[in-house]
Length: 118
Length: 110
Image (cartoon, rainbow over all chains, first blue to last red; front, side, top):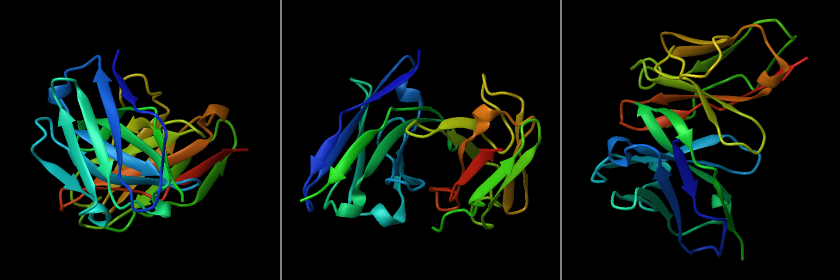
């Protein structure tokens, strides 16, 4: 069955970086774009970015330009989200999801809580 | 890119139909037929309910339907059930090759 399994919770200090992984199984990883979405406590969903199947094309939401890096490793069927220069308001649950077709994300990871605190 | 506009809350009695609107611009909702809808229960990951404006993934009840007119997309839930109580979000592809979510709507079953 299709699964996206994310890495565990992280606690980071302001100014640090965090890298979250998303390991895929049950489907052909190299056929699908991967989205990253976050949700701050009590807030709505926020689209962060997307990486294409071969990993050479990314698109980021404007507010994350320069701080967000999406990569993927086809050999291990794993996608990665790295966010740098963390601020307290980056505290959120971060999700990866598989793109079905131009935005329809049909499978999601379980979410990774990133807490930014001094 | 501003979030798409959804009503903060919508409510209905069991068996009734409700509709959630998602208003964007000619640069997102109005530009393509790439609007999707997600259901999210507390502490759970979102679940895809509708993609490409009006298509249902396998396994999603046919009580859920989607449509679009101009810059506004809509999700209709017919035969409302207690399990439909959740938050709902729309999402659209945009002309800048990015995506944007709606502000979210809390559905309450009275």
